[in-house]
Length: 387
Image (cartoon, rainbow, N blue to C red; front, top):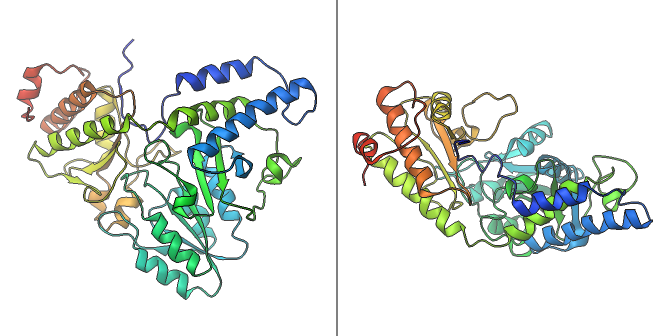
C-alpha cells in the first residue's frame, strides 16, 4: 500500500532496519541490567554496547553518556545542572530549552535575519550577568536547519567562566559532531532523529561535571538518572548510532533539497527561503510563500499524500506561527505561513517531483492539492515547473 511521501524527518526519522532487528532481539530476552546474574549481565551488555556507540557518534567517552527518555529530558537534565548560574539561551532554541529557560528567568540572545545566533549579543549577556553563566545553544535549528557557531560561542563563554550546553539533536547523523571540537560541556542527543526508537535520548558530558538527577531512584546511570534502563530502546539507539556515523548519503540529500528550492523559486511566486545564505543541514528547507497559511499548506499537502510540517512538531497537534521565524525578524504573517520540508535517506527525486507538483496545484487552485500524487510530465508543464 502506498503510504505517501514522507518529508518530515526532523520531526522523526523512520526506524532503521538494524535498530528494529536489535530491539526485537532484546525484547525476546529477560533481565534487569542492574542484576548481577547472567540474565542481568546480558541486559547490561546491550546497554554498554549502545553507550559505546552513542559516545563514538559524538567523539565522547562511554562513561560520560547518560541515557534518558529522549532529547527533552536530556535538555532539562542539562539545564538542571546549572547550579545557580545565570542561564543564557538563544531565541531560537527548542521549546524543551526555552520553556524551562523562561521559568528560570533566562537571558535571551538575539538572532540575525539569516537565522544565526548573534554572538556579540550573547557575549554581552554573559558579561552583564551578576553570576557565572550557563549557556545553552543548539548546534542546528530544527526548523530552518541553520548551523550555529557553537565552537565560537563556547570559546567566548568559557573564557568568561561559563559552562556550555549544546542541543545537537538535529545535527547528529547529518553533519559531523564532536564534543571536543565544539568545546561544550554538555551535549544532547535523541534516538528517533537518527533512525532509532522514540523514547530514548542521551546527555553526553565532556568531563567530570555536575549533574543533579531530575529522576531520583536506585542510582542507575552512574547516579545521574534513576530508574531501570529501557534496554530495548537504548539498544535500538545504539544500533542507529552505529549507522549514523556514516554521513555519505547526506551529499545526495543536499542535492535533492537544493533542487526542490530551485524549482519552487521557478514558479515566480513570492518565496522566502529562511537561512538560505547561512550554513544549513543538508536535509532541511524552511520557506514561506506568503500566499497561504502554514496550516492550509500542511493540510492541503497531507491530502495529496505528502507529509511536511510547520516548524517543530507540537504536542497539541495544532499549527502555530514559528517562534524561530519571528525571532529572525520576520512579520507575523510570514511566520504564520512558514513550512518545513526535511528529507532523509529514503527520499528520492520522485518525491521532489511529487511535492513540486502538489505545491503547484495548491498555489493554483487555492484549495487542495487533491488526492492524485502522480506526476506525469504534462502535469509538471501545466504547473509551469522548470525542467
